[in-house]
Each structure stands twice: as structure tokens, then as C-alpha cells.
Length: 605
Image (cartoon, rainbow, N blue to C red; front, side, top):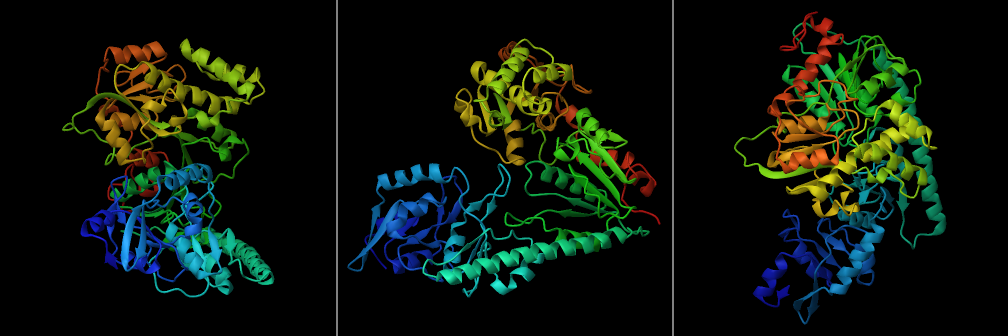
């Protein structure tokens, strides 16, 4: 490929390019040039081309029909090339992509990519599968904020490749492959337009029959493995560590990190831990795989968050369940099948009541905890005079076109503004005056008011700089100017808390929240919505600053108030090590170990 000029060449090395000639595109893609993206990260330069599909497996070499350029880029999140490469008389000329084309793509993306338009797909044509897999589209995974990488299955042959979401499965192997695979099942079949209609119908019928057979085979295997697991007694061997299974799910925003923290805490005690979670964003829980791993591991203890799941345990398996959220399993007030070795822990008296309505006899308190390796105070770091909030707006939980919801919100805001008490009787009376249930008023509308209104107060009146992180705050015009985007839970959240003087902590009925512990551990002063009139103790009065009204919050900020004692002290009560000690002390683990703490976790027969 002959270049127009050396200067032109240097400019285009760092940009994605749309080539009208496939040979030029391949020559450039094969160099595997790295460029810096808009977020400052390094990635491969994309070389798009107009031409026939090929079996070239370079993942930065992607076919884009010239006559479908806008449509193509409107349906994915690939970087839109700002350069067009045109080969003429043996020389490649680089021109800027017309601005109106790029703008049109952006407008269409707003329309098409507001939801999910891609699906895990089985491709009859392997070349279509290859080109789709390179686009790395995202698919809906039945979670409001966590999605997955599109899986592109194909039949036929392709050269050896390293594209992880491009998976070879012949039609006749579907049942055998997916019965045991942890990869998501295909949701649709993609076939070339020129394939005969009769053949298309036959392929779709084969796929439907295979999916039905996979379901039936999985059900039968799960039943067999469940019975095998139940019959397997966990053996305690002198000198061998305690074995603990901690299952979790990728489709959780906080629970997976909490489960991982518990796993680390148990491992520090010398325990052997199987932390079971999807390996990537293409997998789901296949219970055949999980049960096989469970049986091979033969645990003494299982630790679950927010789920009972005790149907496959031997009677001697100790089951610790830590309830952190108001999930339907305990809210529906139906009796659950409790075992003698099921031990319940919950973060709140409200969850205690739910559990007892489901037949649980004893429920112990265990507040949220934090990872001390992530959330800690750094005395060497300069702390800025600013206030932050990290969390999701509950705006989307409200239907503002619904008059009943609007009326209830007005009543709740009136109580909030005068510093009133949100006890059960108050919320019940408000719910009864509307057509809404107590549960909806409490968990949706009250939580919206307590979460969103203090943030609005902050943005309206703060005399200090304000930073808001999370989700949906850009939809609130009062908050949007202070909104700085989302943060992944963990290091980035901790860095924000370590950089700030104050952080808002607002909860409708709880003082001892995870957010309080994270803020305090990072040495940031917690500005806590004052629900001490309904919240369980301890309240940490000397370690926090409390506000009940807008004026209270403004007074704290205007006068730069500080608590009597350092907030980092209270955080020492919210550690995974302390939680593990508590689980041992209040469960059959204490008897099994013959002592109240693990020590080196060696046991005697």
C-alpha cells in the first residue's frame, strides 16, 4: 500500500479508518496498531472495509457495506471511523468522514441503542458469525444494569481464532454441548437471505427441538445430582481444613463482592473455599455444573446471600444465609422448608419480621460489612473541601403520571420537610388513603423521597463543591449539573470517598448501612439522614453528623461542622473478619470447631 505522505501516515495511525478497498484494510489491520480511545485506554485500531465477507479472523478487521454504513454503526457501539481511505492510482488517500454522517449515526444510536437490539445467536453462515462476533455487541441479561457479551455460535468451518464470543457448535451437537455448558443458550437463528425457505424452516425446527431436549435433559440430570448431593455426608477429617462453598451471581451489583469478601475472610482462617460464580459475561449458572462441583468439593458449610436453596444439602451441612435485601422469597409470607442446620442472619429488624413470617425460628443480626483492603483512610492524601454522594437515583421507580403516586410523594415530602417520623404507622396511614400497597409506598416511594430529596437539597444550597455519582441523576435537572457518571463498586468508589470531606448517607430506616461503613472507613465524614427515631442501635452519635431537614443539612455545610470522634473508628465494627466471627459464634460451626473462632481452621474428628 503506497502512502500519500509520511505526515498523513502518522496522523492516520492513531485513528479508526473506513477503507473502500479490502486489501488496503487488511494490510493496515494486520499491523495491529494501538490507539488511545476517548477514555484514555489503549486498544487496537479498527479497520473497517467495504467488500465481501471473509474468514480473516483479525478482530479489528470488520466488514461494513458502504451502502449500509449509517445503518451498521447505528446498531452497535463500535467507534465510528472519522477517516475514509480511498485507493486511487496505487495511492491511498485519507479524507475526513463527513460530519453530517457521524452526526446521523449518533442520532440513530440514541434511538436504537436505548434498549437492547442484539441477541445470542446461532449463525448458519460462519462468516456472518465471525463479523458479528468482532462487533462485541451487548445483550440483555434480565437485569436492569448488567448485560452480557453477545455469543455468536456457528456451524461449518473457520480458521483457528481467539475470539472468545465466537463458538463452534454443529447443529447435531447442540444437545450434548449445551446440556453441560455454562454459556448462555442462543435466542435466535440467523440465516443467509438466499437460503431456501424450506431449509430455513427445517433449521428453525431443529433448533427448537434441540432447545426442548436440552431443557428436559438438564432437568433429569439436576434431579439425579440433587439426590446424590443430599446423600453425601460431609466428612470431618483430623488435620484437614473446613470446606466452605460460597455461591454468587454475576448479575448482582453488590452481593457478588460481599460473597467474595466472605470467601477471602474464611480463607484467611485457613479454610478451603469454593467461591462459585460465572467466569465472564457470557456465562450463566448451569446447575449441573454447580452440583457436580458441589459434590466433588463435599462442603461442611454453605454460605448464601439472599437465598435459602437448601434442597440439595445433606442434613449435616451447615447452611448460613445472610439476608440483605427484601427479596420475594421472604416477603411473600409463605412458610419455607427450614432445616435444623439452617442459620439466618439479617441486616435489619424488618427482614427479621419477614423471616419469622416464613417460619424461621431464630434470626441473628449481621450488618453490612466492607472490604478493608479497598475501603480505608489514607492520611497522606490531601482531602478536598467537597461533598459527594455515590448511589442510584430512585427516580425510575416512580410513575410521575400516576396521580396516586404523586399524592403519596407530596405527603411524604411534607413530612420530610418538617422533620417528621417515618414509622410504620405513618406509612400505613398514607398507603391506606391511596390505592397503593404499603409495600409499594414503603420500598419504592419512601425510598425515593429519602434518597433523592437530600441530594436535591445538596445541589441547590451547598456552599461547598458537590459531586454526584451513580445512575439516573442526569434525568433530574437540579442534580444533572453535578452528575459525574457511574462508578464501579470498589476501588473507584473508595477513591472518591478518600478525596472528600463529607458524603451523604441517606436511608429510610437504617443507620448501620453499607454506605455508612464505606464512607467512614475512608475517613470521610458521614452526613446521615436522621432516622434514629425508627432505626435500630447503635446510632454512632459521636462519629457522624445527622440532618433531619434541609436546614439541618445546610447548617452542617455552612458551618463546616465535624463530629466529636473520628468516623474511622466505627468502621472497625463492619469488617468481614468480624462477620465470620459472628457466623461461627451464632451457628453450629462453633460446636463443629469446638471453639468460638477458627484460628487455623484445623478440626478434630
